[in-house]
Length: 305
Image 1 (cartoon, helix red, strand yellow):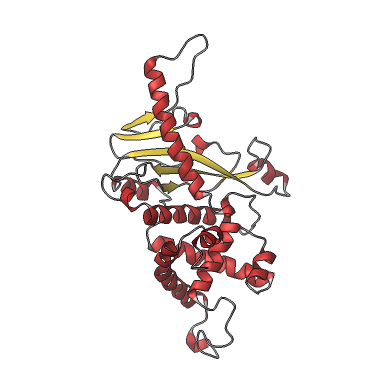
Image 2 (spheres, rainbow, N blue to C red):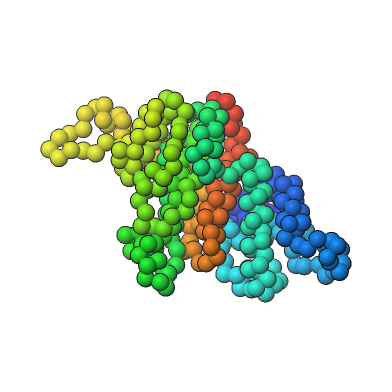
């Protein structure tokens, strides 16, 4: 498949150069995971790595497996059949390699910040202080417990998980990802749980869901609603045009995150904290693509047109 770039991108969401960029850190993360989660050599009957070889024999096989799962999000029975293993083996590999992939993206500095202290340092290092804050939802299966159903009900005839993201509009990367919350939690409430500190004189785009959300020393761009019986002024129209242009960039970034179907389709996995982990990895994969495909936007003064 390495000679069929269109198929490789369709199966994994990444190009060959991006996969090759991940492999060294993925190999290191895999060895660290094996050393941590397997028994010590003195307690084993045979050496680590000895015995019958599994279906995912090489590092490339392992990375390809987990990328295919994230990008296409098939049933575990289906991906098991594709890779010549049982459903239970597929389940074990999915959760094991998800941890390894997260560690890989962390090592390569592609993951967004998760807390205010880290975020302040990340944003200060950005070349352009133009950011956006936005909420994003993804559907999940309806829970069997009534209380959980009510908690995840988003008010849009569906049950969802929700996150708030801060986007760097210059580099078009996700710089911050909030903790995953049930769909009933409001975007602004999620944002207020984090004590955001933006660099002074930052420009921040936000939509109407963040009314009266105003971090210190930040210039806010938010659409101005038309008041009943009054036309917008020329200044208000200009302001809304600017906000609309910024919104397009935000939507492109979120679409990039949701190229992996595991955060786009109805979420089926039930393991605790897995929904949060896959969203974090999806943001990291998007940031990786932006860095490899658009290196000009990652350099001082660069921007993606």
